[in-house]
Length: 404
Image 1 (spheres, rainbow, N blue to C red):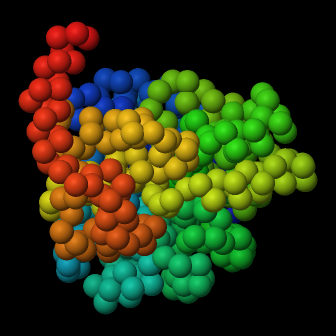
Image 2: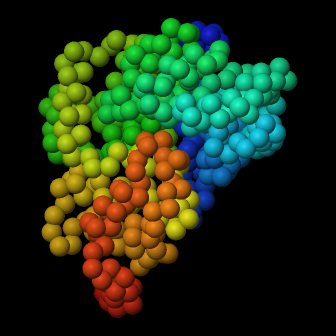
Image 3: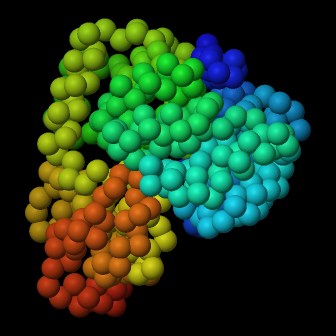
């Protein structure tokens, strides 16, 4: 892939980066062998930066990366990871966490180090903990090379954080659906004017913009160009911006890696036509009318003290309306019972929520999660929910196993 240059660092990076938040799993744990295979395939085919974080899979993502990048692969790729701002109580916490990250990654220096999940309030709290002193010291000691922050605030506050320090880069959520949620084009221009590297997270909105789309949206894209995939439309729109350095895509199979690399190879800044941009705008409007909850399934809200699988509950609820599922036994209702009700595994349904609000401060989308879960509960649980689950679990499953 033709590289894009970070003005401040003069480093050349692939326009597609490997996002290691959604690595393949087996029995609820990261599949090390499969993950290592994917990481090597990505590097062998031109990707030269991989992004992870201390909180991804409770540190397991960093461990996988450390194991996969032993030997020759370490010199072929830049490592990006993040300091969990929400876990910092005192200055010493930052040094302790960084040293633990270096140990998990099995390296002496991190190339791109981000303050994770910050807005203006979080940044002010970190400033009181002397975070800038910590970053400068870590740089001087050679533990980190470049510093930035991953942003989860409002568009209005974004420029204030950009001006708070001499940052090398920034990471933002930006796609054609969420182009005004956290950082808008004016904010991107402001970051670019400082020479900062601009990295993109959630380019496919947790897969919503890549997989099967509602018929109304699919028809718009297919009419414009039947050969393009939904992922291609989304990533192309991002890379069409000359200010964007790199798109971190959470790829968990070889086909996804190859598709993303092909897109990175084919899209140059300002290469999309006016007709293509209008097509995306039409599709966005159609999708906005159907999507009920603006959740990306990032999982930052987890674990829930009550055991609610928040992303899965919202995903199933969204799919019901995205795909206009009707009828007494529609697919979304079946999925809800099979995945979160407690029939197959432990209960993790929306009705378990007691409104404690611990998830609220962790949501990058600033969703009123208890309120949204109440909508899910009313949609799928209704009267006698526990009785229905017990009936299916004790009688229905026996009938299913006997005949199927």
